[in-house]
Length: 250
Ligand SMILES: [Zn+2]
Image 1 (cartoon, protein in one colour):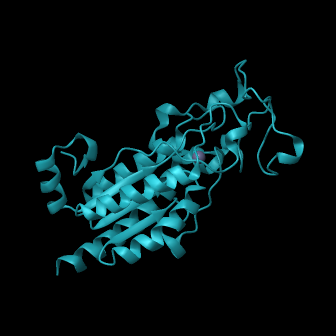
Image 2: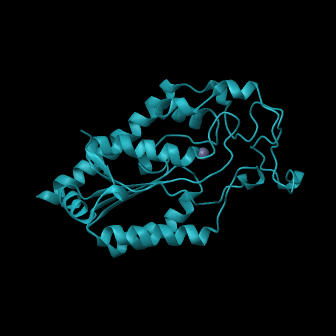
């Protein structure tokens, strides 16, 4: 039997019971954007949700439905990207977090798969910690959630992220597509970005296997590398959660 439950599937009495037993909630924060030829457009949310599942398997608690609507990061020049108004995303983040803490959650994990979520987390987490001083609120991306301990590097759809995907949900990754691009339209109706608007580290050449990536070549990604990094983040977060839970129960 799994140690955790999906928040949206529970009835009120079940929620009360679960929160009394294990007052931990995990919220995967993703969005929809082009992630190269080999990764699904929901990569960041799928990554965050799979990561939260491993963490919940160890620590119990409730997983909230993935937050699919975010923005920021400059990949909206690529087709299949849905960026939203950042103030809307921030408002949903803040309101829902407050509600969860009001409803009895003592440990709130806001795990962002998309790096520009960091800015919204920074805006929201300080005031939340101030308003709920007895709660443990851990927030960030895989690079930042362990705070100063973390030595993890991030990228976009390149070696690091692809390694996470190969470790967490290999069935949805297809490395062979990198060298075998289908004849697809890559730009939205407005066409490619102007040269001066290009990010210096992002690949804008649709004929390249590295199209839309930022970072080291995704073909160097391995599940083993992904496992290693994921285990490290899980271990550190679990230590922090358990330390807080023990203190809280004494
Ligand atoms: Zn990503």
